[in-house]
Image 1: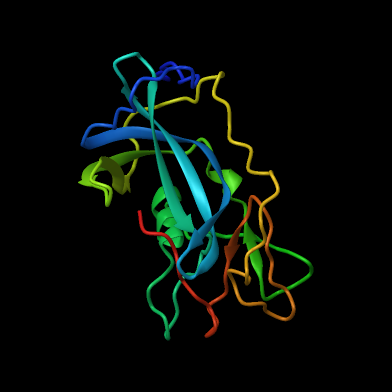
Image 2: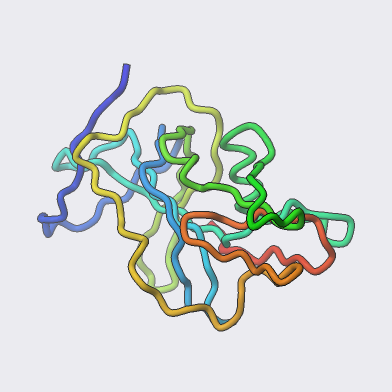
Length: 202
């Protein structure tokens, strides 16, 4: 049976309350591609919004965000470590991410990240101290869900379609002239030697 809690309408000035440490049920309510301006230039990243089974003192749903580099590099002989987003999707879905061929290219495939919306998991929540000294909460890992959740009908998704400054360079090297950058799709890279697996730790 789905469990519903009220969604924060953004009108309260109450200080943000962290999700408590421990295991919590969560459901992906929103996902999209954002641009992170880091020390090595602008990088595309996947932003995930989880709704949890915990409410704050005003009865509002507690949310958590998670960010990954927009890469599904699976690892290869030269670079055995896969991208964190690849590992995350594999853990969440229980299978290796697969996508559709695009632009008649057999060298590049796309994975639709929208397919992750509505998927559920148990979230291992950890607290930590941020660089500015404030407390923070992060997702240290996920496991199979044990409780059924549902996204309330009044949940408003973020508008990821707003114009953004183009990256200084493509996140993924071009292959046969295709650099394959599209909003709402993460890059599923083939295991070629030039691939990178830079991503944002969570």
